[in-house]
Amino acid sequence: MIDNQAKRLAELRNQIPAEILIALFAIASASCGFAGYASRLDPLRSRLPAVMIATSVSAVIFVIIDLDSPRAGLLKEDVRPMIDLVAGLPVIKDE
Image (tube, rainbow, N blue to C red; front, top):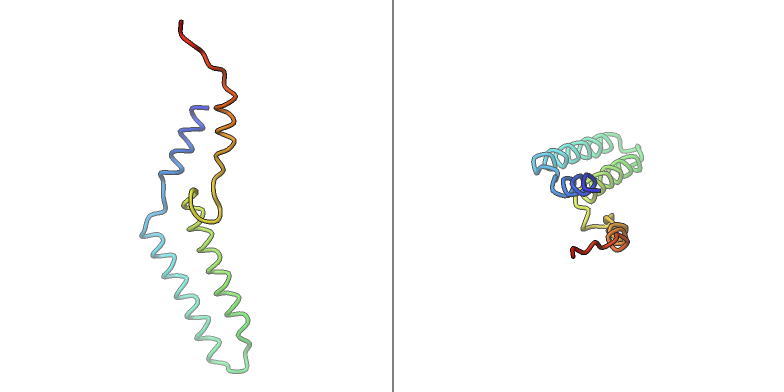
């Protein structure tokens, strides 16, 4: 149980570095820009693939950022099992 708590605390303290997030946004911007440029070159081409790529890239970035902060956002870590475990532990009194 102590090892699990240490592992959980280490995961909460380790965040994605800002440089990685900046690089992620730069790569996403470049890929969406190239997709938009390519769809503009051919006016008969449908814009649906470019919109789908932009949506999927945005969704992946959102999930990465949301998973990086487990106590905030849409995907939250549930601490109820740990509270139930502590409540179920026997209390030892020193006499």
